[in-house]
Image (cartoon, rainbow, N blue to C red; front, top):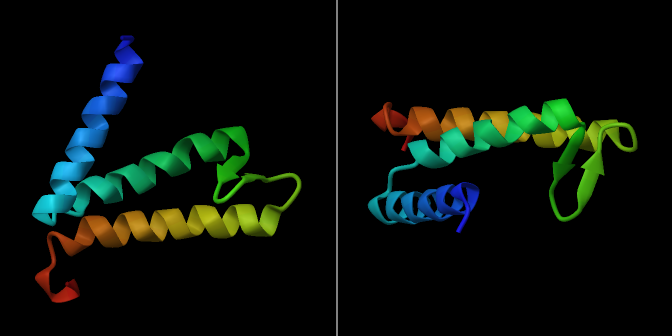
Length: 83
């Protein structure tokens, strides 16, 4: 098993445990992490690959949505009024 596979399995386990425990911060960090490579590659994945050059409106809608979801999930664990 490669190092990357081990990291993927560990990440999956952490996500499942955090979901079971109701800790959304991990998911928020993951949403924000997904945005970074998309900015550099110009590709996002929803149901299929969305290229920034082919469909810029949908690409940026996806990116903004991931950022908003990430921030909301991060903040929701620290601001009880948002839950």
